Every structure is written in structure tokens, then in C-alpha cells.
Image (cartoon, rainbow, N blue to C red; front, side):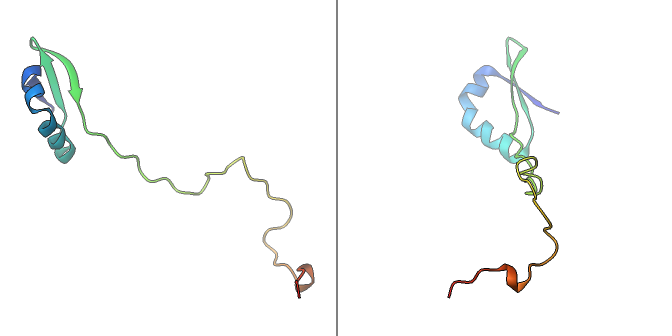
Length: 78
């Protein structure tokens, strides 16, 4: 459940309240004349994405990528 706070109280304690919301994850509803006007909510960090699929549709596989190359297929500088 979110805590309710008057706008004047929020103004006086804004920085501390932001730290509290970040630490606890609990939202604060800010009111003006007993009506809700804003909400202070924690920012949720996005989950780390897997690198698989990042280049989907951008890379084209040409030929066999499974079978190993023979030694004759390599050019070696001597």
C-alpha cells in the first residue's frame, strides 16, 4: 500500500523521501487539498537481456557453418 503525504511535507523532505522510496520500493502518493496529484514510485531496473537474438534479421549465414574446413582451404602467409 502506498503512503499518502501532503505536498508541503513532500516539498520539505523530498530528497530523503526519494532515498526512502529507492530503498524500500514503496510508493508515495502526494496530495494537494486532500486530492492525489502525483506519485513517487521506485524505478525498476530492466532485467539483463540475453545476447542471443540481438542481431536477428541482420546477419545472413551463407554456406555450411558446421563442417570444419580442411587444411587446404586456408591460405597461409609464409
